[in-house]
Image (cartoon, rainbow, N blue to C red):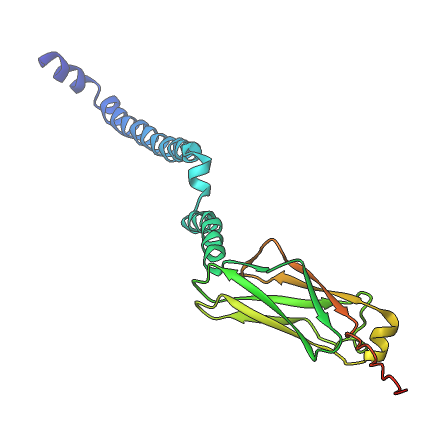
Length: 209
């Protein structure tokens, strides 16, 4: 200790000059350390950010909810189909006489646990709209809850002379499914045959001899 004091006493100017220099070096190292920390520490955080799985980061809550909703579409459609039931004609052919005023065709539905609707149309064949039957535009018919049968009516045009001349004539009635309505069953189309009216045999009157 005495030697150091003697050395300091011998070189007082060197000691005073050395202390500011040491402080300057310490300050420089502190600044460099701060710069390195902010630069490389932030870069390290940026590099580590994408380490989370891309699938997890890409699936936002909105997309997850949408995916769940889409997965429920098929069961919901099946439920509606089951509730609306299946519709069908009773047979593939129906006969009517030209002497009738209309043709009645039944459409049956099973099961009939809820409401539902279907579309039907008349397709021309040898029977012509406006000549053999009234022109009918495609129509939507609705079932109420629990209703199992609906009847379609086709008004006929009475023209016995034409019926006898041309013989039987046919047209087709077709069912079409609408959104949320019953599915189509076995007989979704029926051929309607309009037969000529029956002719009466003339009575024979014998002359008395």
